[in-house]
Each structure stands twice: as structure tokens, then as C-alpha cells.
Length: 148
Image (cartoon, rainbow, N blue to C red; front, side, top):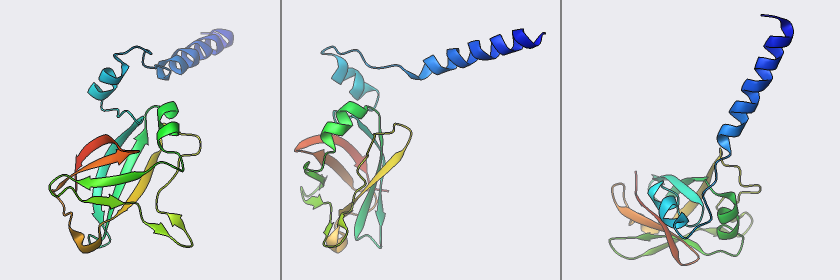
């Protein structure tokens, strides 16, 4: 195979693979239902896991952005984010430290391949591994997970 043919074949394969990752949901009324079926929340994120850390005093939530447009609106600086213990109904806030600020990572550009984090105050260790919690953003339930 000649040099030009190999170069042309490489360019063709590169273009083919570049087009594979550009799928978006259709902007129809069924988009929310389709997103929910695929594990995507209305906030444009997918919670990877919720773990008890720091001897049970904090809950660590790791998430990925699956829709940067929705996530940018939902995860803004003014949004109220909390975890709710489904057994007791207790709300667990994101701690706000005087010198550091809120203990959460704000996505700047909303990179889809990156894992982001948020910490929630679990003072007294009331939520334990195996308990069910729900993540709320601006008063809307985003996901429901089991604490690891």
C-alpha cells in the first residue's frame, strides 16, 4: 500500500471516529423520559457513587456531567444542593467553610469525561453505609443512591 493511500485511509478513520462521540438527545417532550431511562438526571449529571468518609462525618458524592447545558444551569453558584436521608427525611447540606467556601467542585467548562465531587455534612454519623439518600438540586430530586 502506498504512502498516499495509507495517509488517506488514516484521515478517513480519524474522521469516522471523531463523529462517533457527538450524539445528542432530541429536543422533544420525551427527552426527559429518555434521559431518565439512560441514567441521566434532569440536572444533566449522573451520580457515580455516594461514600461515607472521614469516619462517617462526611458523605462524598462523585458525579459525571452528561449534559453540559443542563448541568451548567443546575450547578451554578446560587443553587441549593443537599442530600436527603430517605429513612428520616433529614437534609444534609454542603458544608460552607469560612476560609475555603463550600466543599464542592464547580465544573468550569462541564467536561463530560471528568468526575466531579461534592461533600455533605453528616454530623453525628446519622447516615450509614447501606442507607438510601436522594440528591436534591434547587428543590428537585436528581438521583437516589445507596451509601457505600
